Image 1 (cartoon, rainbow, N blue to C red):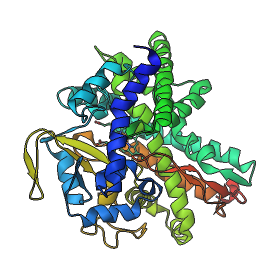
Image 2: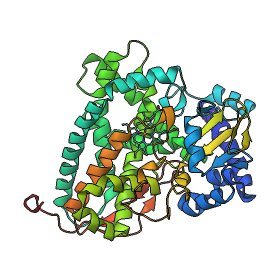
Image 3: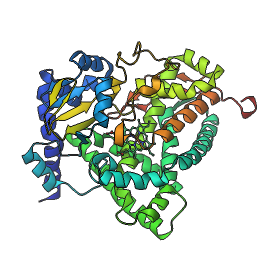
Image 4: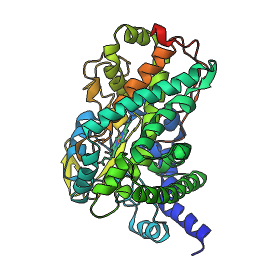
Length: 434
Ligand code: HEM
């Protein structure tokens, strides 16, 4: 099949059909369809969380079920009766066939063998291999790197005070430096990793329009060929980075393949969003900044509260492996349940006055922002360190920083954060006064 036609067919199978059905369903008010196709939900999801909650603990839709209920989400993510969704697997049979016939075999965060798309026994084996190098000790060492990198980036910003886009200059640069360290990426390629991450971020969304799908595919193709070359270099001359260690450890198979999700979706853009969301929330609530400067020991809890209230990953989904019952409702074998993590994180049954930003909230850490069960985020400790160190260092350095415009949201549905965030930095606090 001609390449352009093959790509069109692939889009149609994977996104075009879903998009068509979701647009129709959204006009009729179907909640899951609105999640895919309603632009007002993407622009401001908060009112939509409450609409889903008002539908009951587990809402039946034309496309499956959706839950904003914390207890159900918590239980479902840990249940052996459900499995993760891999890209294309939720399509009706003819479309699944077409998708299989027309796709490139590019690494994709939601396609096996990515950790995000496999289940035991493969998942157990892969996760064990990754955990053997991604140890608490390795993460502690990375925390030192986070501190040094944050200080370097802030030094650069201090030399040119004024209005800057803080997402571009800081929130993106810090995680890209850390993920590059993990993967052994040389300095000259770091900007590229950033571009791959940005291009591929919508790869977690379903029902993409054709132009966005093309950008994602281009990003994945570039990433695949870059990764091939990069891993070839690491095999020839390994460094002391975690990826080189992983390559040495893996007796068979290619560890890079199940880490594709980590690089492109799980471990990078998510952290950029945590930092951007945190800066925005704290600028909008300066009284909390006062409290944090008097009580810096509150920073870890403030990060939990940011993750709860503006969750960088808004949702995940699972398939029922057999007929089962949750919250007194039947879920049939093969049916899809969307766990609306961001809405569950505002469940009033768990969090008092759930829409209030409260850095001293006692149970802020009970959020589901890192998922749960066997797919619980492998990078949670690192992400927490990046959030805590990154935000604290920034506000310590620029105590008078202010928002300098509305900024713009990212064009993604599963991932949630700022694409641009202009801030007026104000004077930098000198090292001597810190
Ligand atoms: C604020 C930042 C982050 C958030 C909100 C986040 C969130 C998540 C979520 C929700 C999942 C599970 C998805 C599901 O259950 O379907 C996940 C999985 C994962 N995350 Fe993170 N993540 C973050 C940062 C990181 C970092 C920094 C790394 C590593 C460098 C990382 C590595 C992973 C990996 C490898 C998985 C797959 C685990 C598995 O399936 O067994 N994440 N993350």
